[in-house]
Length: 296
Image (cartoon, rainbow, N blue to C red):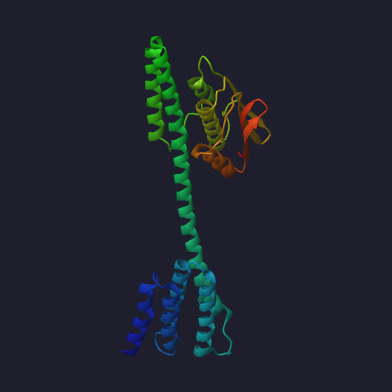
């Protein structure tokens, strides 16, 4: 009966280890120590070690858990005794160190998984913003052109239909790489009073680098159209050795610059790839220039 009560006493605290991880692990260890000399001896050690493993998993601070586990290991070893009077190193590792390492390692894996999910969501949010924002800007321009010049209304409506269909397709299918056609992107935003030239392409680049370059160009062109009076915009992609340089320069005058979600998204993309970016005025306009490392 006594052994049964001890067994229950060792296991019961683990039911509450999620709420009070270190406290319950210590309580389980104390009961296991009290069972020294009974049939619960080895099972009690394993359950107590499992308690410290769970404490390392649930408790953010590792040091108190490790200190408590090692202290209990030495106390238990002294009470249980050994033929040589010395606590074996294997006991210290198995009971005091290994449970903490396992629990902490599993917790790190869980946190890394959460981080990957958060990064994926942030990436998806940037993609939606970049794509939808660009298409809405182009649709607005086409609608305005149709109002100013009624004769072009039919062509403008046709373009709006195409843009809407493209936007819907991209939003529905962001798990696949978007079509990174920069000349087509420039053509959508060009107009009778705005000339956009392009050189270079994303062909042959790693998908992450190609998509980042496309989004940088897309956001820079959208901002130039929305917030400046630029009549000429030059887009250049140049690859030298293992670096891709993306440059979007215009001759407009941006009265004030406010860094919104789009620009922040560009900076985040560049940072994730380990590149650098400069955004600001030049001698005769505004320029966005990013350097992206190309790792195949």
